[in-house]
Amino acid sequence: MAQNETIRSASVGARASAQIDAGLKTHMNKVYGTMSVGMLITAMAAWAIAGLAVTSDPTGATVALREGQYLTGLGEMLYTTPLRWVVMFAPLAFILFGWGTVMRKANAAGVQLAFFGFATLMGVALSSIFLVYTSFSIVQTFLVTSIAFAGLSLYGYTTKKDLSGMGTFLMMGVIGLIVAIIINIFLQSPAMMFAISIIGVLIFAALTAYDTQRIKTEYVAHAVHGDQDWLDKSASDGALSLYINFLNMFQFLLFFMGGQE
Image 1 (cartoon, rainbow, N blue to C red):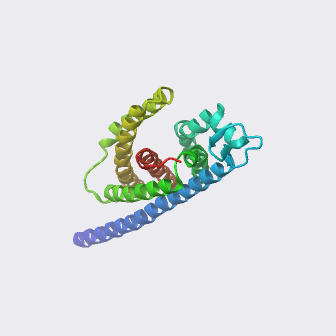
Image 2 (image 1 turned 90 degrees about the vertical axis):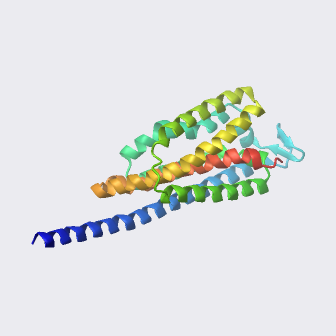
Image 3 (image 1 turned 180 degrees about the horizontal axis):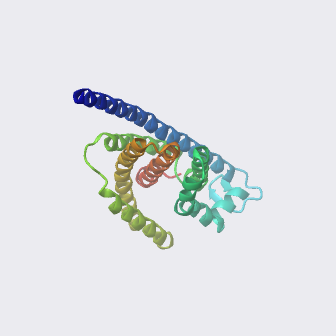
């Protein structure tokens, strides 16, 4: 009888493990899918805003970008007035002060909608890259970032090495980067920006692997305890983490690879 109970328990355990594994694959697909939609929204928003911000008609324009190109009224407002600081720091403020509240109070659909809203806001903030860099270099850098991101995320998902110990160190690095970027807004030092970009690529590359493993580990832990409310929201939360890592790697790489207009 005891032997039969042991066999039955093992069978139940194996089925539960198989269900968690299948759920994990579905979860990760949803994370990457949600992130991809967010990236598409960001790209479309950035391209659309940049298109509305620049004109070839000098009539009424007061700011010239380069020969034959001028800022429209919208462009002047976004890039030459104090509003540019709001646009620049609004995404960071949302992550620091808004996302946690959304995760606690909103349902799964609300969390996903908030993520897509954030992606739109990021598109507005990033629209200025189309005024500085060539479209070819932006696409080229995006493809390089995509390849690097895929490799790093795959490593984080498949490695047996515990990456959790990197978390505190990497978050300290991110805080240091933010402080350095804010200081360099006023210093405008090319050498400092060069150092920031190198360190930024390395930090967010490591965060990509770290966050992928964290998303996987957290899913398994919550799935075992049947925390369905968290599971319903977690795909958007995981997508946000990977989305931020991707975009930061892209921006820092663009400093090296971007060809200017």
